[in-house]
Image 1: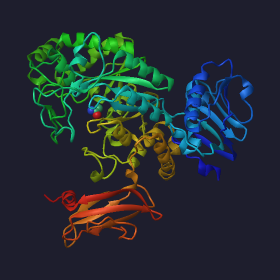
Image 2: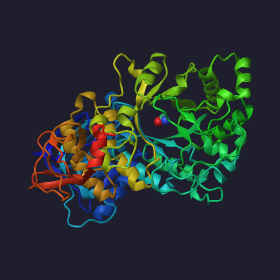
Image 3: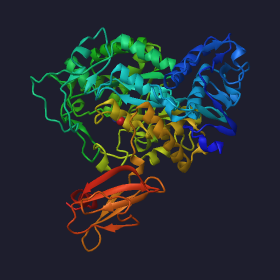
Image 4: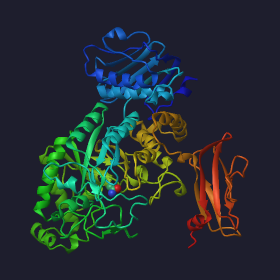
Length: 619
Ligand code: ACM
């Protein structure tokens, strides 16, 4: 059945399978109307995409001659179709060819992404793949996004990613119709953007000591250790990236995270903090306390001094260059997690409070945010910040990115601020995506299934203030691009569907089917993915005669979990998990293998019994 061959992510608004198929041949032409020169870029993009794996040099030709049997034709519709908006499209494929139509070029680009998913998985390869019949099922698709802001955040401060790696990340995100790359450019561990008027930011601030292991637990660098790990983007690099993104209908949102998370800036210009001293860029050694009470505090001062005019002069210089480099209408100023324990002791800040009649540090922070908003507005940009910027009252016109749950976003929208929903609970893709035994340690978990239930639009909120949603990849524990990909995919598919597809189209079982069709596509693209959905969460309890029992909770249906306690690796002939199992008294390890239809899926899991005892609450 044709529909069984169709597994598009994000799920389009309307998919009507038809009979027959389209076949891409060496002579297939990619055509566009001669009068629509803007369309050529998308046609060229498609030609390049298809040519590498097929080995066909598919010609791109203006003129309606190509709107004939067997060809691919892209066109802007003569009269605009309101339902499609700026990014929607119609696509028809069949024996007579492929036709993609839209109101605007962005829509054609998304039609191309959908078309790509109709072709065999090998189409994602960047090298020639022989002996493939390049057919696409006949189908008619009508599609448009639910939200205009479909973001992924990449933290390039904690670990630096090169310009080429960022391009690679963009290549993957656009396949699933993401259109905002939030670039977290500065933090305690590195300042990644050249600011010509403040050269030390990258001479000093972009470099730390290379450490490998578990971030935040690293040994303290020696004073004379070489600081040669890191990097930054020059203005030229940024122009290149912005253009690369623009060609793929992605806006880059620059974030300069202030007043907290600013140690790299402070190491470069120590006069920016309210605590005199010398500072170094953090290399992953502990420098903040995060007590369970939630009242975190800095062991060293990583916050800018809101009472110093030097800070506003500094920020004016920074945002002048940021505004020139990034064409997006918004600049993100961070605003999150400012440790205030050094602010509390500052005579400067006490004087500021008296002068400006600020009652508490929330109001001091709000004063700072207001000043930053003025600077950003003066550069012709809108300010957006993490939801802490609501504390102490937020200036009108500022937009809010809600991360500590949805509440900040709801409050902000009710006050008339634009909001991007990005809650830790559903879209923090730096969290572990499977059982902790299988993942680099992070303090929290987020299964894809939970991410798939992300609903950016809360009830009772005026939809016009909810611009969309965004998944965030913080990179403390992400040391390279392969791991960045692994953390992003497939969870990024779940979030893509939450921000693009109609809410009524959400269906976990069907989504899992479609995700599995994406896996070989990622393989051909050489993008690393996480197979975590095949691996259960293992819970442990104080129970039974030996005082320890386990429960295994699969993420998806239809899996057989086989296990052992005798240190051997289980296969499909080992005991199959049904419900709660008692752990034998002398066992060392639990090992688990997941099977489906007699074939192993996912990885072997090994969990030491000492770890299970810890999970059960034994000290
Ligand atoms: C954040 O996760 N600190 C915004």
